[in-house]
Image 1 (cartoon, helix red, strand yellow):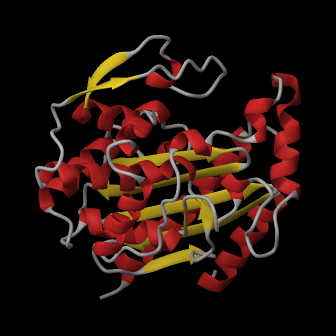
Image 2 (tube, rainbow, N blue to C red):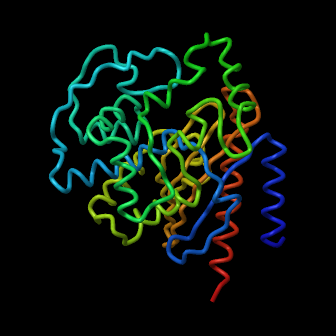
Length: 305
């Protein structure tokens, strides 16, 4: 099957499942890539925690922040399903900046992330990315603002109504009545922009080598592994990633490093037309499509002289 027919078939499979997505898989050594709407912009939800970690570590390297400094973090006090870590704490806690980085990135702890945003604002994170030549990702707000959606104001039996609104209230230009889903107001980016960030973290770039190594280590320790990890983790490969979820958005981006030396960046941003909170079929299909692109690219790389 030609690449064009493969992409067409994958698009049809996604559409039949009620999904639209921005997919890109790149061989980080050769630069060869395959994708589906890789430049389509999405709100990136918790994926923003990787630029936040990068900015925080860069400031630690410069001596502007002390990684061992203890920060008093107020409890998130959240009791609804979903949030993890400090977000579910009921009492204040003192946590070192280095440990907040772990909680924010590997555990996807929103309260830990906001403690880091209090040290380095969204505008400063964006400016740092732009200074490194990474211009496709825009950071506009904290995690607390991200989570102030209609879903948090509804009783559990009615949360599906927030998903209906998320699905129906968008515009053709990627605007939305829910600010967190409007790419002109939310933290936003495309699969291509996220792959550029991975390329800069996994290969020589303007990012300090020690900073890149620490971010890679944090991503390798990601504890949320139900989405793409089952299709990219094995005894002969290492999967390092970050997930993001908000209403009908399900994302993940990361790098698979194979024992034979091949290294692929994978970025998947999706939105669902199905008004359901739990969609294991969508999670599995995201991974299936990403792996199919990776498999085809890996086969093409192996066949080239």
